[in-house]
Structures are given as structure tokens and as C-alpha cells.
Image (cartoon, rainbow, N blue to C red):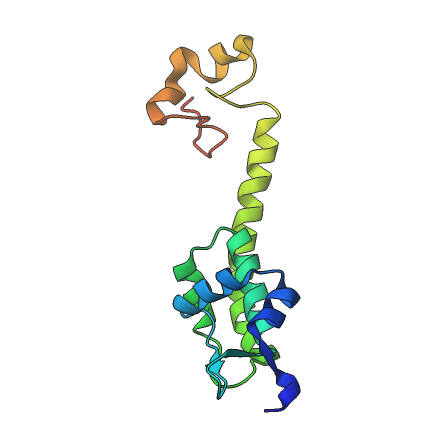
Length: 151
């Protein structure tokens, strides 16, 4: 390990845009593993920039801290992850992204003609959702959420 490969928590925060307190939180959740300098200060590998970037992206996708931890656990400890290591994680992320994209596309397409009880038009409600049958499926915009009309 070279001296250039080691950075302080402040440098890591500046590089990632993640606050020092958030980095400490991720440490307590075992998402990143700093080591201590001889003076007791936290030190990180420069490769932790990638780990923290992954955490930010995963959180934006709605993954829980536990799910993020499970994915990061697939990476090697004690060495900088290589392209093959990251590819393992990207397969899972790709699957999650594809599912989210499909759900968002379906929602976008259904919003054009259907929201709330099942549609935007009270004239069409009698056809698409007579007697508010969608209400039996639960609260909210049932057809937009993926339920099918029972015609």
C-alpha cells in the first residue's frame, strides 16, 4: 500500500460529497472499514471513494442500509476491489434498476389516462371503474399501482 492510497476522513468527505458524520455512520454499519493511524486517526483507502459512491447510488435507488451492506460484503476485504469484483455487484444492481425502470415506465404510461380511483374522467369511470370496484383492492390509485381492472 502506498502513501497515496491512504486518505483522511476529511479528504474522503471532500472527494465524495458525503459528510464526515455520514461516513462515521457508514462505518458503524460496517459499510466501510477504516484503519487507524499510529495517532489513532481514521484513515481510508482511496478505493473507499468507490464504496461510498456505491452507497450513495444504492440509497438513491431506495436500497436499505442492510441491502447495501449485503452487496458490499461481496467485495474483498483488505484489498482494492477490481473490475471483476464490481461486476458481481453490478449484476444485482442491473436487476434492481430494470425492475424500477419497468415500474416507472408502467406508472408513467398509466398516468396519462388513469389516476386516483382508476381514471381522470368521470365519464370513463363508469366504464373502467364502475361502483368504484378499484376501491376493494385497497387505497390509492390501484390501476396505476399495477392492479388490473376486473372487467
